[in-house]
Amino acid sequence: MRIVTRPDFDGVVCAVLLYEAESVTHPVKWVEPADIQKKQITIKQGDILANLPFDNRCSLWFDHHYTNQTDRPYKGALKIAPSAAGVIFEYYKGKFKRDYGELVRAADKIDSADFSQEEVRNPEKHPYIALSMTITGMENDAPYWDSLVTMLRKLPIEAIMDKPEIKKRCASVIERNEKYKTYLEKHTEVIGEVAVSDFRSFEKAPHGNRFLVYSLFPETVVSMRIFYIDEPQEQVVVSVGHSIFNRNCNVNVGKMLSAFEGGGHRAAAACSFHVSKAEQYIPQIIDILVENKKN
Image (cartoon, rainbow, N blue to C red; front, side, top):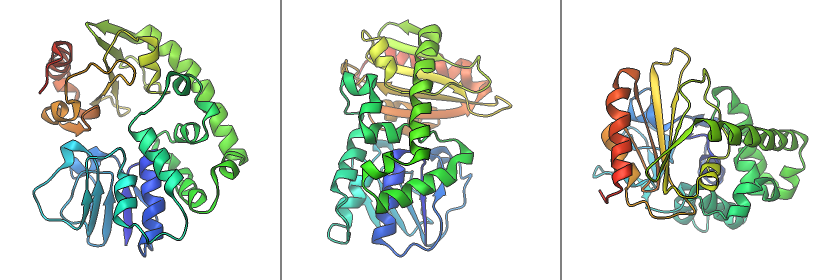
């Protein structure tokens, strides 16, 4: 039995819970949603798929994304909820030896972006938020994600935050966020009420606190981030998110991006496509967001 999930805080907490609830014998397989959507990863009998689109080859599936709903039969649970971890926690209620309530509430808060301005500006003062920002999604970081799963199964958050590696990574997060703020200010254009951050001029797109853009451009209701996913620059990624402070975006962005080879939540979603489609897709996405009508 193997857990297949994505490398973000919700995915890490999903793995924590599934290791406790099921007889998992293999290491976690960390993948991105596009890997499932484009059949770039082999899912097999016995796999537990969590926080990812459905694949009918899996034995169990847990998710919470609007665009991942399916009419096909499956074992597990899908619920439109703040986090996939919360769906798993409810499904296996009573099977956990430890109290994971606080951890699941943190996953709910982080994955649903239920933050204050203070939490966005000073994440280092909030342990779970700071820890979540150390999960970058870089391919070579799988040993770190595995170690987080192990630590969160055994240790309280205070002990985890006191680990030298965690301290070092959190310090790096703070430094990265400062640089990211500068990149956002330089490479973001406000179109109507849309903040469009175009990082295609970078060989590797800058990363940082994804909620900073809403603090820097409070007049906007939605943000759009454009970047290349690979070294040959053949795949473009567009990620879109509703402002967590100016909640006047009417577009279901998960549903919108499902028409552009992607998907996700109502308020946060992404798509990836070949560079040859960029001139067609990107203006269309911007137009939909500027129009700001319910879809």
